[in-house]
Image 1: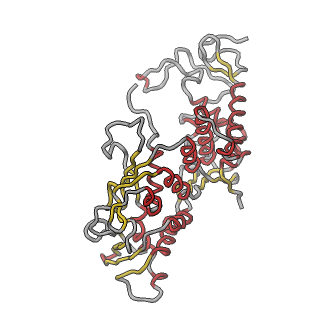
Image 2: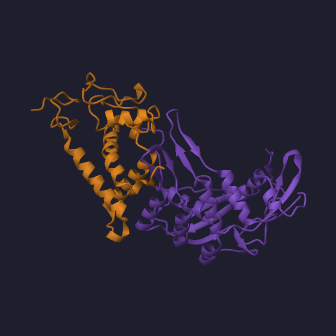
Image 3: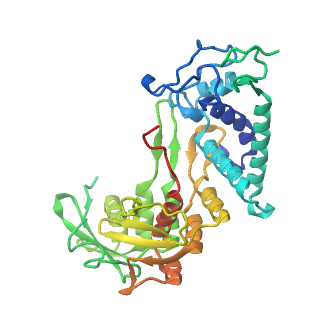
Length: 169
Length: 248
């Protein structure tokens, strides 16, 4: 019998999926994504036209077209999906329940920017989830660095900026 | 399976010849038209919050994401049956048998209670709002119920940050199992929405109790149909959602 729990209370699952969610969100954000992002060109059907040749990073697979891992072309809930996740987390489809829980955490995170909550006003699961969100965000930020020339976001291991070509030391 | 459709309009509506929604009728008269046009009548009592919670408990709403797409599941027939079993008083037009409760076909039961479940909010644009009010000290939500009732207004005070968080907590609740990650089960949410409604409601319009207008906050808290409370609260918080329109 599967053990069914409220997604927000499954700390282990949040710990597993939060980094993937954030990374997928980051790579889906056009202004932050490096490489294929250029000036906005409505003539290209809304696609951003690069002023440089596209740079395909060996460590970065092509992203799905739908943001936040919501693309329907990837299987979920199957052995294949699990194997896919094991081989490449960034391509994984995040379960709906976990997406809802993460959405709730992001909402709480936003609310805490404008209002202070006392300990008793959040559930223990929410407080833990916010902590996990903070950790995942910090870890992700440590993996990226901004280009000093154009501001493009690149993996900290990159040798050059995928947007402007600036070489990094 | 019996072919059944609901009577929807005309003098045989379940709360006949009233312009307002009566919250405490002696009984709800619901015509049901069976296959062949046979006209039947179900007499129901107004459902309580406990009745709606029993309905919701049987509904078992879930979403599956198999590789080929997405599938929404709900046990609507079972839920309607659970509600009908609790609130039916008597029926007319059927062969008189002592065990009629066990013999009335499931589709008839569903047709009898379905109008009670059909409570929806109207978009602000459709209700005539000309401008989004940024500093409102009261927020109005309009509902339609079943086929016959429109202009059901619920007037709320603005929610606090904690109440907004509580709404989001209820709304986002979802159950999953690691062994079947493609399946999401949505737990019962009615009680959470009702609690918020009771905290936020100021007054209602378009409802009556024993023929008299129901306007006071206490009456709304005590006597408002829980399904209406749920729809109104969801509309209240949903009004802040927005999407980008066409343009730059």
